[in-house]
Length: 179
Image 1 (cartoon, rainbow, N blue to C red):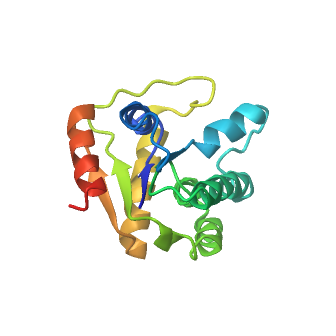
Image 2 (cartoon, one colour):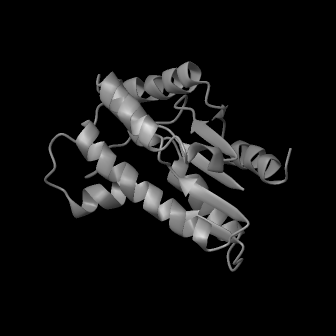
């Protein structure tokens, strides 16, 4: 079972992943996939056009590689901080619908490997920038809207996950238990 926490920057994806890392500490049947975009941009800090189809394609390739490694581990549960679909939404939000479509086609074969995409809601989550997160709050909203449009237009099953960390974890626990 693979669940991906997806969405724009600073909505609690990594926070949730860390909570589950603590909860499942020592369990070999649970694997965590780290955020590919953060690792990519930390390794390539001088990239200017971060949301172009070319750059997001490179991020997507890294995310796919990381997820394939998690699958190869034989884990029963895989929890992902972002996913291969994030690049599609980011390019779409940047106004490149054709590039977004190409990125979606590249990973179409991989989408059935997810049990659930959990789109983390931005409501009541303050936005904090850092060396990697440089966008303003309006761009953040654009990215969130792009996820909603993408999931709706392509009929990709997802769930909007809001509330406190505790409320979010309660729902993730229900999903992990098959409810």
